[in-house]
Amino acid sequence: MLKHWPALSALRGFEAAARLGSFHKAAQELHLTQSAVSQQIRSLEQYLEQPLFERIGRRIALTDAGADLLSTTQQLLQQLATGIRRLEQYRKPHQVIVNTTPAFARHWLLPRLDAFRAQFPEIDLWLLTTDEPPDMAEQTIDLAIRDDIDEQPACHFLPLLQDRLYPACHPRLLQVPAAQRFTLHGERIMDWAQWQLQGGEDVGQRSAGLNFSDPGLLLDAACQGLGIALVSELLAGQARLDGKLAPLSETLVPGPVWNCLLHVDSERMADVRRFHQWLEHALGAAQA
Image (cartoon, rainbow, N blue to C red; front, top):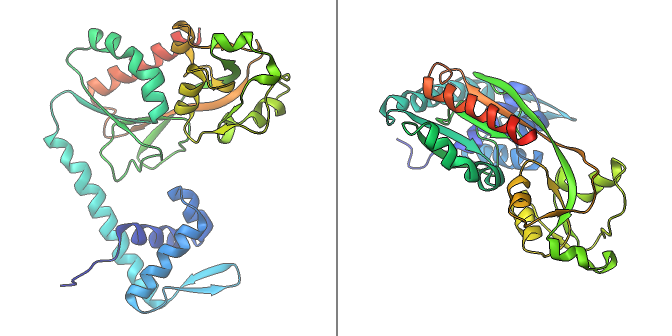
């Protein structure tokens, strides 16, 4: 038996690249950079002491060794995924496993859990928060609620809502001249470039300031009065009700789209359906 096994992540990277015929497409599927996938395959080739791909310009083709390994790897990954899903029989009765982002869990879901538990006290909710989207085929997750997921095999892809963005700050900063307010920046669609692109007016935002990769931390910083921020209407709802945030403009611009991935093995579970129905109703009430 081998003393050391190749990393599972390297095998997944190899399988995706071989199946898709592209390091770039494999990186997109696995939510990695292309260089990360290339490094995984290089490490695997070094471990095996032979090439798995022929590089022909920008194209790749499997070597004979690579084609042999692909068959083995696909069988291994399928068996592993099946084995992990089979563990569901050992779960607690009425358990529902939900994956979401830390920001959604903290700023939207957590303030509503008391209401959910009062309505469904028998459901044993398990919240799994991750920065990256989960692989629903390999992880035992009933449903995922995120603004960064795409369709996945063996899952129903269910759009939930179109979020909207607006500039906001702690109410005490409204008394501070616009030129003296500090600017808080987010990533991707939460960046001020989105506000400017959609025609939002100047509210004193500047290119310099504090930068946040997590929209939840961005919202926390705004609620603490650290500066002005472009915030999610969905996630900032409770903060506005609590008097921690005030809008700097009545203009709203399109934000991220929140979607749900529901695993086909979980849709038959009554408790999962109840949670999904409660979620849709609560999101609808929040948007009203």
